[in-house]
Image (tube, rainbow, N blue to C red; front, side):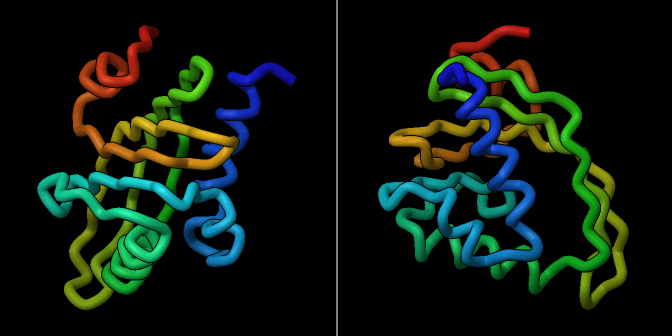
Length: 131
């Protein structure tokens, strides 16, 4: 299996585990992970504990979440994923329908970098990829 396929498969496993399996999600993460979530103005969160905190905060805040992966582009240790996310605020009931473009960096077969872009072209450029 090519390095690109391994990276894309690892990122798909990250999405699959996000909602339902904390242990499997943790297993996708590199110990030196740095995550830049857009909802926190891209303030970096470092380490597995930081990533798990972002995940918990998201799951505590939103319900009825559906994520459709619309496109995955990978090249070695860089993968960009366009995700169509629909969800509802757990407390407010506000509906959200958005697309995020995740730039994943991988090292040793694990996610070591995540930057959430609102613009696909910017995500591709940051990852050194093209359509």
